[in-house]
Every structure is written in C-alpha cells, then in structure tokens.
Length: 265
View (cartoon, rainbow, N blue to C red):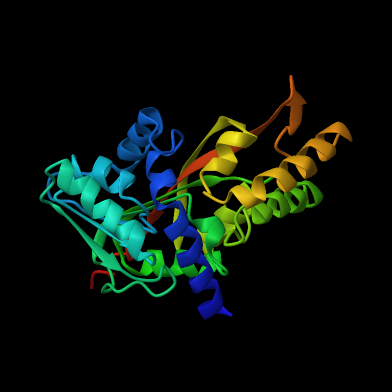
C-alpha cells in the first residue's frame, strides 16, 4: 500500500510542481516569517525541511541558517526547489530525494526539522513524526505547519472527503488534539501552537492541483453541500456565486527534550 501511495504522491505533485510553486498561499511572506521565527535558527544551525516541495520554505530558512537540507519524494518538486534556490544565489542549501517515513539521514543530525502542508499526505503521520524526531538533536525544535481539521469527527470526515476528491494523494487533515498526541508520543514537548485562518475560494484552491477535470464535479458537490447547510467544519458557503471556505492553519512548535543529566556520585 505504501508503494502505491508513494506513486500517487509523485504523480499528483509532478502535476502540481508549477502551480504550487506559484501559489499565493504558499508564498505568503507573513506565514514564511512566522516559520522562520519559530525555527529560531542561527548561523551554525542545520535545518531539514521534510517534504520540501518547490523549496519555498528552504529558501526562507536558508537566510538565517548555516545549512538547510530539503527532502522530497517527487523529482519534479526537487528540480523546482533547486532552481528556486539557485536563482536566489543560496549556497548553503542542498536537496535530497527521500521518503518522509524513512528519512535518509543519521540520528540527531539536525537542530531544526520543519514540515509544511505535508502531514495530511502521509498514511501514518505518527510514524512520520517519530522519524522526524529521530533525526532531530536533543533540545532541537520541530516546526509543523498544516491545515487542522475540526475536532468534530463528522465534520472532519466531510472536510477530508472534499480534500481527497480534489487531490487523491491527500489522506487526512488532523485535528489539533491528535497532532499534539502524536508529537508527545514521539518524545517531544509541545511548546506552542499558533493558528490563523486562510480564506479560500474554490477556484483558486482547485487550480493548484492542475487537474481541470475535477473542477466541475467538485464545485457541484461543494455548492450543494453549502446550500444544504453542511459547512464541513470549514465554514463552507456560497456567496455571490463563489464557493468560499476557511482553512484553519496551525503552526506547532515542539521540543525534543534532552536526556536527563546523570546523577553525581
């Protein structure tokens, strides 16, 4: 199952390489600045961006860090990332192909591990978080950014169904409480979670997938749901013929606790 899902991710994100690289939401300077500040990088810091896509976050982090590595499973995304960082004349970045569930790095190799808009594509997000924690140094920082599903299971299920119809490589947006549980189970201490709302319009959201054959049917489904008062936990509505909704994004910072000091004798 993992192999078929990996293939699906590569197919979908090869298709999305151009549109995602140019997406307004992904290039929002305010959000990128939040990620940079949360990472607390210094000139000697080593950072890893898991599922780095077209290198947008890598570029932002590289301006503060000693070295940044971007890892992704999709060759087309890595090519975009390399092109982006070369155009910015960044010399402290490199890109490595790899699966988030089996990162090609040594234990405790990084001071900071970041992942944005990726957790909802993993079949086993808990295992992925454990792997991210494995390559993080003691007292290192993990910064995850993703859309959060409703804590109401029925609303979250409907929300995720819409996401899967848009992009079949989507698995599941997590509610905030579940993400925190996975982080703590991986031996991390949640330091903070900052949330904000991204106001979305269906046409803009659908365009990113570069799959025009999905647009018409999904708009019909979303419009009918909104007309019937089903908000899917994302305030789905129709306003002046436009299908609107809200994605609640969360930036969560977790710390890998250092080992307790040995007792003195």
